[in-house]
Length: 332
Image (cartoon, rainbow, N blue to C red):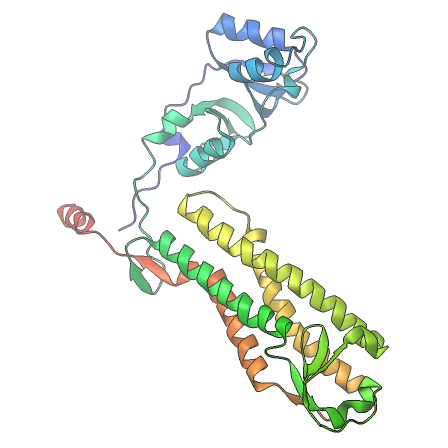
């Protein structure tokens, strides 16, 4: 059973909090704090009455007094901390995380874009559930966030190894062909042996032979080289974004959808499109006799599947309902 979700409207909102204009001086802010007996003031743009942040006595001490700045001329806007206000319908957990991520104590509360008060991180604390029961997923586990972190991290590392490291090292490739069938493409003469050559990430290589794509003197191979560099860069970023976002989930830290989904998704896109580029290259060049490297194709498919599983890790694990929760549900 999912625990009850609390909202800012469930808190006791302090509606007698002081405000100050963003263009006021630090001295004015300090005087107003003393007059009202409060450690924080909500900062607004006077002409629009728009809430833009909060200034605290600690900000004044750290950014003005400690720096030796003149409190009579220093403006509030240069010293305050910027924090987006919450509404009465904002979940308490979101308001709490917003303050915790900035390491501040107060967040303004607005309704219809008008300030109605503030709530503090201490107000939110008692409304944060000890645990959130996750009902979405297939595999029951005790701690979904930890399971998702390890699963996503392992999938991303293995996927990166199979899809990037192996073709980069020449252990697997995209296409293969015999040297005798590729002489016209390589611009090389016959040799005694006829080794099998692999089209890897940046070159064509085989037994004692390595020909970079840049040496083929054709724009399509230059394009493949450039695309391979992009794939390498985005795959590294995608690997770390999956590990970072899954770890952030274990700490209840919010991360954007771009770093959670788009960047790792681009890794899968680049892996798939790399095969298409090779197909285009063979179609518009000398059309050598080549074949798909079965091992390389298998590794690429497994790699893409692993990255997709890591991206969609939220749908794989669900929480195990504790006996206490079941007992409370029956009692209710």
